[in-house]
Length: 617
Image 1 (cartoon, rainbow, N blue to C red):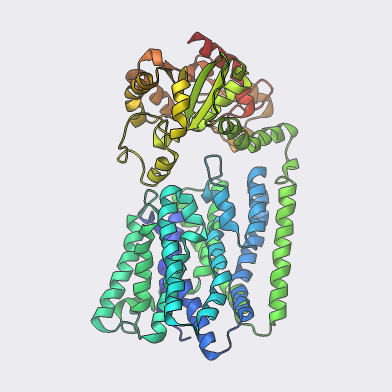
Image 2 (image 1 turned 90 degrees about the vertical axis):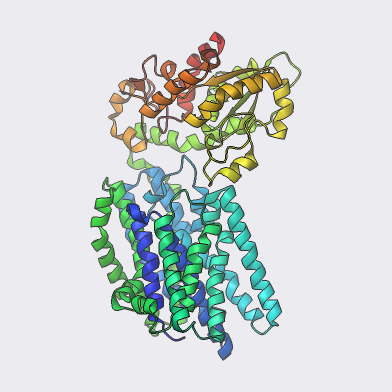
């Protein structure tokens, strides 16, 4: 395969936006599209090599995986090894345990599935995970499990069969990317089914260029310039609100394809990309991609996560990446003295070693015994809360009412609704009332009777809200018709509150049930590192103010919703003073994991207050 220096330059266009995006440099809020550029480049290069092998009659799947191991694993294993001591020093046990899981997932190339499974409001922020960026390597390797043998099988088949097979997979993947991203964008982002079409775009470029020369002349130069413009426009125009990958990923993908197809020498775009600075950074791109995220993550854990500190670390990122490329990545890839048997043997040994280390970290629960028993109890609360939070509420969703005389209550809400329901269960109120629940995410609006909300709901959530529905869900209708009361609990947004008077009227008119709205609760901003930093003996007396935005939302609700329909929780939960909320029980156990969501201890602590609030109304 003829070397094309402009492809290395294109790697520069891919990796720098990713790095600057992870450094949270504002103009690069769409820098995540660099990964999509990498996918197209990878599909192009790998397919070009495979087609060359097939045409020469010496295609070998073993040869292919040997090349992949030489290219991917040495630098990857070095980064994983280098992160170990820093992870032990900086990560809390729950974070260290999650890191241990990633040590197992990375060499088995399922880290995208792991990080997808760890999403959610209780999950650690992605930018704090040292190995989160390896999800893209997993997607590529999952693709390359089936693609080379399929390509070899179809190579000498009829053209219509090849076009039908790969065209069908491309189309199905593109449709899946569009739908999954709208339904649940994290699923569309992490899982390979939504990304296969991007790699196949690169493969299509390789097939085209085996039969045709790159697009020549002014037309080719114009298309290459258009391609580069599409990539750069994506970098600067996209942000966290963009429905991505989905159809929008076609912009950087098409741009990358145009640059590859029109990259003739002498072409101005190709000339820039083939220049020495672009090629140099492009050659380092894999190492840059591997090293920047762990360095950024540990800086954040050390309390130096602002954009200036991350920018100041870029010389270190480049230095470490150059050393990795020069002394690890390149020698292993080019050293033919290393036999295939040695390469596969070292790859297996390294993989097993990291899996064993990861398993040891997980089994030790993140080396939790490094901490005092009181701190261990605190961390166990954080560890157990996600499952506890959802269990009772989810089990009661669409639960039918029986024929007893107990009052029938529908509780509708989001994670705050699940919290409230846990208090009811801890209070034993299921012996006095019958409860049935309905999950309604806060961004969807815990409202009833309003039709078009598309201007108020993020485009990333509209399809998910449509599928989940609200109280208009068909399975809820018979329950609402039987209900004596409907309780609405949510992390209220102002636009939702604006609809509450109409919602209350619609529900009471339609179903004849009494509607009660429960306000927001909060115990002040807190998380596990903050909680652990408070001396053990000082925790029972620790007090802090509720977050201002919670206070303001509650005040707004008082002005909009009739007072006889609202049950306030903030002041009662903070013992009458939201400027002095307790975060710990008398035994030093924490009541909340983030200020808003409750531990089991928190739910139990609030039982007497909720009992009095329910009886008073």
